[in-house]
Length: 511
Image 1 (cartoon, one colour):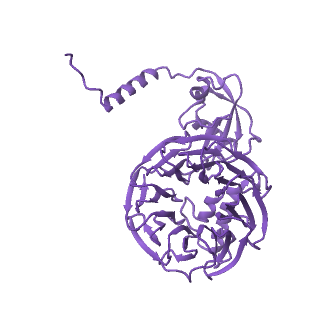
Image 2 (cartoon, helix red, strand yellow):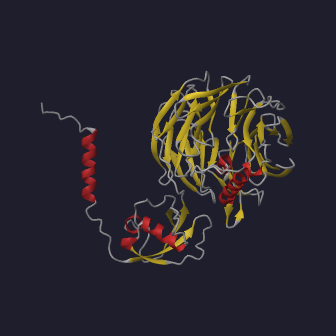
Image 3 (cartoon, helix red, strand yellow):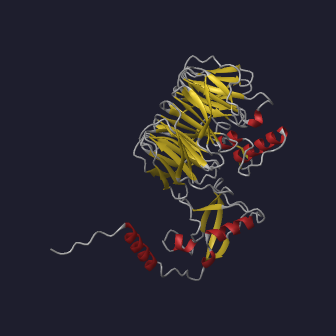
C-alpha cells in the first residue's frame, strides 16, 4: 500500500497561499499616463467649486487624493481623512489602493474618461476593533435586557435585568460598583442623562426611577403614572435643558408618552394620541419628540408645549424602533473624542449645541433625519422637519426588523432583523449598500463605533460580531456568551463594547 502523506497543516497551506500570491504580484508596475478626476461630495451629490483635476496614474493613490482634496478645500493645516467611492459603488477604495489597480486595470473605469469620485469625511480619530473578552461578570440573577455606557467614559456601564435590579459596573476592573434596588419587576430600559450624572430606568412595574450615577442612590420617589410597562426612555438634549431641571421622556405599552422633571419627580405632561403600544421615544435636538407605535404611525410632538405637530404614516404593520441621525451627539452632549470637558456650564451648553448643529447641518440648513423599522419588514427614512412624507422606503429584509441605528457621522444606517442579517443603507437617500451575513440566528441589536468605521451586532446565536464598514466584511467574531445576547452597546469613546443576555453575565470586550 502506498504511503499516505498527512494533509497539509494550516501553516503549510497559509505559506503556500502566500507564495502563490507573491508569484501573482510580480507585475505591479503602473504605466505612465494621466487620469482626470472629479470630486463629488457624497452628502450633496455636487462638486461645488472643486475643479476637475488631471492626476498622473502613478501618483493616484487614495492617500495622495486625500492630501489633494484637503489642499483644494483649504484644510491643509488640520487635515480631514476622507473615504472615496467610485461613482455609485457601495464599497470605498481601500486606504492603500490606487486608481489604476482598483479601477482602470479591472475595467471598472477607463483612463480616457473622467473618473467621478464621491468623497465622505471620516472621523479624525480611529477606533480599534474589539477582539477579546476583557471581563465576564456575573452578578445579575436573571436575563440582562438593557445595557448602556456612561457618556463620560467607558469606565462605567449600566445594566437592567430581569432580577429587578439596575447595576452600574466598573469596566476597567470588571466589578459591580452599585446595585440599585427598587423596581418590583423586570427592568426593560436604562438610559444615562447626556451629562452622565443621572441614570433613568423603567420596566414591567410601570414605574420610572431616577438614580444618581455616582452614589447609586435613588433621586426622589418612583415616577408613577403609566398603566402598563415602560418600553423606552430618552433624555432631553443637554443644550435644550433648563439648568438644574433635566427632563426625561418615557414611552409605554399603555399608548402614552410621559415627560418627567427628573429631579423634581413631577410629570410635565403626557403625550396622548397613539392608539396602540408606544414602542420607542426619541428627543430631537430641535425641540421635537418623536414616538413610534403599534398603531403603525410615528408622531412628532413639540417638546415645549406637548402639542402634536404631525403624524407620519407609511408602515403597514407595527413600528418597532426609530433612530435619529443625531442620536450619538445628543447622547454624548459635550463629551467628545478629545476628552476635554468644558469648565463652565455655559461652555458645556455651547459645546453641546455646536456639536449638534455640526452633525445636523446639510447644505447650511439643520435637517434631522429619522429612520423607522417595522414589522412589515421595511424601513422608512423621513425628514420630519421639512415634510411628513417619506423620503424613501428601504426593502430587502425577509422578516421583521428589530432595530435601526444611524452611524455617528450620519452617513450610514444599519438595520438588524429576524432574518439573521444586518443590512447597511446610505443615510442620505436610503440606497442599499450591503448585507452583513454571518449570524445564524435573529439579530437583536447593532451599535456603531464612535468613528463610524465599525459596527457590532449581537444575536440569538450567542455571538457578537464586529464588521468593517468599508468592505462590509466580518472583522471579528466574538463567541463567549453561553446563551442569546439581548443587549449591546459600544462606548462613546470607542474603547469597549458591553453586552448582556440570557446567560446572566455582563461581558466587556476590548481590543
